[in-house]
Image (cartoon, rainbow, N blue to C red; front, side, top):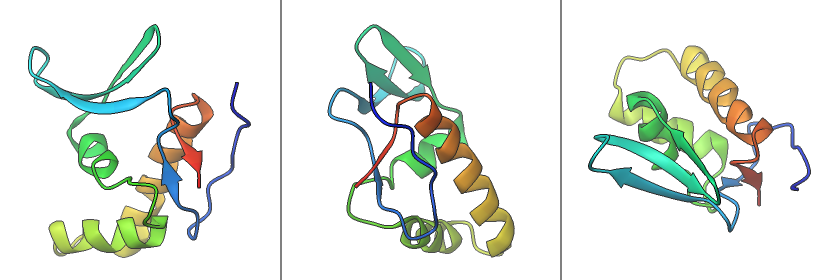
Length: 97
């Protein structure tokens, strides 16, 4: 099992090797597929996870979201993204590069 991480704004998150992000046409949702597990993402989580590439820091991901969702308050987006990604990290669906 992967070591649990505590995400910080400068961390570079990525999916572990065993997990894949894909759009499930039957469910019409983004999912994270892992051995014997499927995690369905809501629309916002799907938007965020499409930006998780193992190259961009959380700060860069938040910058991209703020461009996409013009007018959204930075502090609120930052808090929401960190809480959502931390939840995925706690379940083993996210690692820090």
